[in-house]
Every structure is written in C-alpha cells, then in structure tokens.
Amino acid sequence: MNLIIVTACPQGVATSFLAARALERAASQRGWNVSTDIRGPGGQTQSGPDAGTIAGADLVIAALGAEVDLSAYAGKPLYPLPVTAALPDPDRVLESATREARPWRPADRPMVFEASGDAVSAGSGRKTIVAVTACPTGVAHTFMAAEALAGAAEAAGHSIRVETQGSVGAQDPLTEEEIAAADVVILACDIEVDPSRFAGKRVWRTSTGTALKKPADTVRDALADAVILDAEPQKTASSAGSGEKRGPYKHLLTGVSFMLPMVVAGGLLIALSFVFGIEAFQEEGTLAAALMQIGGGTAFKLMIPLLAGYIAWSIADRPGLAPGMIGGFLAGELGAGFLGGIVAGFLAGYVARFISQKLPLPESIEALKPILIIPLLASLVTGLGMIYVIGEPMAAIMDGLTGFLASMGTTNAILLGAILGAMMCFDLGGPVNKAAYTFGVGLLSEGSGGSAPMAAIMAAGMVPAIGMGVASFVARRKFAEAERQAGRASFVLGLCFISEGAIPFMAKDPLRVIPVCMIGGAITGALSMLFTIKLMAPHGGLFVLAIPNAVSAVLPYLMAIAVGSLVIGFGYALVKTGKADVVAAAS
Figure 1 (cartoon, rainbow, N blue to C red):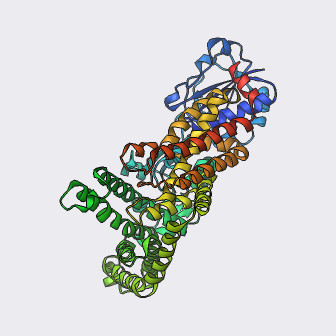
Figure 2 (cartoon, rainbow, N blue to C red; figure 1 turned 45 degrees about the horizontal axis):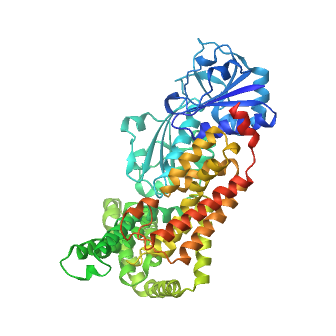
Figure 3 (spheres, rainbow, N blue to C red; figure 1 turned 45 degrees about the vertical axis):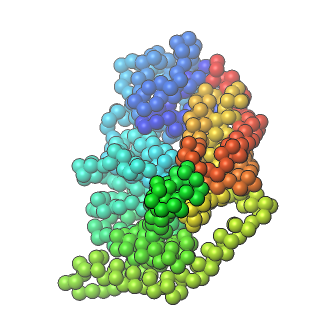
C-alpha cells in the first residue's frame, strides 16, 4: 500500500507535524510505504511528494484544519478528516480510510471539520471565538498554544482570532468589534492578564500547557462551560469559567514575568560597565559609573518591588499593586531579598482582596474603595507586617542561602547544578522548569556580581532543543523528513534558550526523550557549576555571549553546553527507534 498523508493547520506546522507523524508511524507498522505532504500557513507545501509518488499512490489521507488545494490528488482515493482526529487513534483512521476513501474530484470544495468529524463547507464556522495566550517569558508557549487553539477551533468548524501577549507585548491585539462579535473568550494564560475588556462576555480560563496539549478539549469545554465575566474588577478572579485552578503558582509567575525585563536590562547594563574594568565603576563621573548606577543602582532596586507588586496585582487586581510594591521595596531595604518580596506580594494581594470582598461600605463611598481605602489599609498592614514580623526572619533566611551558595564546596555545587539542570529539562517550560528558573532569577536579583545557579539553569535549558537537532542530524535514517525539519528548527530555538523547541519530540516519544534530556541537562548544569561560571542575564541564550562580561567564563560555558547537547543528541540517536518510518517516508 502506497499512502500519502496530507496535513494542514491554520497558523503553523506543529499540529500538522504531530498528525502526520502519528499516521506515518501507524502506517509503517503495517508495512505501508508512506509519503507526507505537510502544509504550512496559507496551505503552502512544506515537503510534498513528487509527481511520480502521487501517481503511484493507492490512498490519500487528508487531515485538515484549514483550506488547502488538493487538485494534485485528483482521481486518487482520498479520505478527509479533522487534523486533531488523527492524533488519538491513528490505527482506526487507517482502517476507516481503507474502507471509506473515495476518488477526489477537482471540483470538490475544500473543507474543514466539525468536532464530530462531519465535513462542512469552508468558512461556515458555527461559533466565533477570540482567545488570548500568554506565558511568563512570552516566547514559545505563548505562540505554540495560539497555533494549537487556532487549529483545533478551525478544525471544529469555528472561526477564531488569537491575541498573543508575548515578550514584546500584545501582538495583533483583538479589536473591540471582534470582542463584541465573539461567542466565547478563551484566556489561555499562565500569568494574569487584564480581563476587563471582556466584561459581559462568556470567558473560559486555562493554561498555555493545556491549550497546547489538549486544544480540541479546550475549545469544546470553553463553548460548553464558559460563564459570563462580571464587570466589577474585584470579582474578575472568580467570575469566569475555569479549566484550571488559579492559585499561588500562577500569581508567582505573573510577578516573575513583569520582573524579568528589569533583571535582563539591569544585568546586562552591569556587564557593560565591566567593559571598562571590573572596578572602573567606582570612579565617579565615568561612563562605567553611570552604567552601574542605571543597572545596579536603579534596575536591580526595582526588581523586587515589581515582583511583589505584580504578584499582588494578580491576586487583587489594580488595588493590590501599590501595597505590593511598597512591601517589595521594604523587603529590599530590610535585606529580605526576593523571598521577602514574594511573601510581601502575597500578603499585600490577599489583604487587598479580603478588604475588597469583605469590607462593607455605604454605597456613597463605595467608589473610594479601590483608589483610597484598599491601597491605604493594605499598604498599612503589609508595611507593618514587613517591618515588625516578616522582614527580619526573611533576611536571616536570605543571608543563610547566599552564605551557603558562597561557601559551597565543589561537590555541593556540582550536585546543585545537576539538580537544577535536570529540573530545567524535565517538562520543558512546565511547572518544574519554571520553579528552577524562578529560583535562578531570584538569586540573580540579589547582587551585581552575577549568579552561578542562573548560568547553570540557562545552559541546561538550552541543551534539550539543541540536542534534538543534533540527534536528527547524526541519525538521519531514524527521522522522517518532517522530523528532520523540526530538528533544524529545534536547534536554532535551543541556541536562543527556548527549551520548547524539543516539545514535538517529547510529545511523540516521552519515555525516551525526557530521561535523555534530563541526563544531558544535569551534566551541563554540573559542569557550569564546576567551572564556577556566573551569568549576568537570565535570558538570551548564546546571544548573551556577544555582550562583554555577561558571562564570566565564555569558553568553559560553551563547553558545558556542547557536552550536554552532544550527550542528548547522541543518546537519543542511540535509543530512538523508527528506522522503518524513515525508509517508508523516503520511498
């Protein structure tokens, strides 16, 4: 049996690739010869079969989530289905295709699909959906979740517009007209976003991870269970339907996401001041002194207030912002560090929310609550709590932590680096990864001399994606052409410290990819700590190396990254199966 698999999703190739890979593997296990035609945005062919392969095809499976031109397959037995329906049970798809495929006519209109699998005419979506995606760093998960939601919604016959709130702010923002026309709003956000513009609309909250892994379920649940968002700001946290619990983890990530640009800018400005000499900033009136004042004297001082302020904002909306920032500034002044800032943010946020929800006031002065009463009372409680109760114990904890890191022996340093490296590679942008990253960013904010744990964390976060690219190159025969393309993209993403480039490989082969990545990440983290490398910025990947003194030891750092990447690349190339898949794809 000669099979051609055509896949298409609206905004990219992630869902198309996964669907093609699932069907390709199932068909190869039956001994079929397989070729793939993966369509990108706009229906362009990424790597289509040649005319001879099409002529010899016995069956064409078209897993579609967007309109595509199928005229090349005129007269061939073709079986259409939603692109998302190819993922759960590809064997059943193959069985249905062999029974139900019919010759394709050029006059047949392109089609998309309802969730039930029934074909409908292109452009006849049943519902209008708008969505917002946002993750703490605003890079990979934000855009991958947007692509997955768009593919699932259009595959189900609905129209959708997705706004991505990435690292440079909202891209292609939703208009008032689009929001007004929407039947439901999906907020797939790992951080808090302002929902006030969706007041009066049916809203469904979820995470970027859920939207990425289960986009069809997310769309279905949103249409079925979303509830109307209350127009009152203090009630937004509980008035929207939710596919996840919004708790401390999400509030913490919101604070980290707002703090992150300040950490990057401050760290790199300090590194630039070192260009003129490590102690050149001590000479008043020099450029080095000015750069140190901007980076270390200003940006680093604002980190903890931003962290605490936006944790409180996530909990209590705008009334929590002022008390949170006040508590965060006090944490810095009292030496309580980022741990004290986290505590101050949660204290301010929950106090502000308690006052907002539980303090009854006459209707005549109710309007003063968010701009006067809540900030005043919450700031008073938070400030006094930090000065008299929380500040001193948290300062002692921070002193103990920084003292431990400073006096840590080689064995303990290697162990810490290995643990942080393995955590970064465990779930590639998930909760464990973010916990390690937040720890590193917090330590980086504690001083102007850089952070050794942060260096280990960023290096380990780069190696899974780089390693998958290496594996797809050194074991080409074990990877289909679509996988090799994904490997090249993954390699570039890894250089930029975007671990999520390895997600397509993890999704298809988690039992092999995750352990191999954790081993490589642990080795990289351990080597980075062994060489006592310090990093001035928490993001940027290899491009940070172009900034003088951003990394304390460039060559050992590159060696640590290279070793971990090669361990992952050759390790996965060794344990991966699927040689038959590639042979089939090449035929």
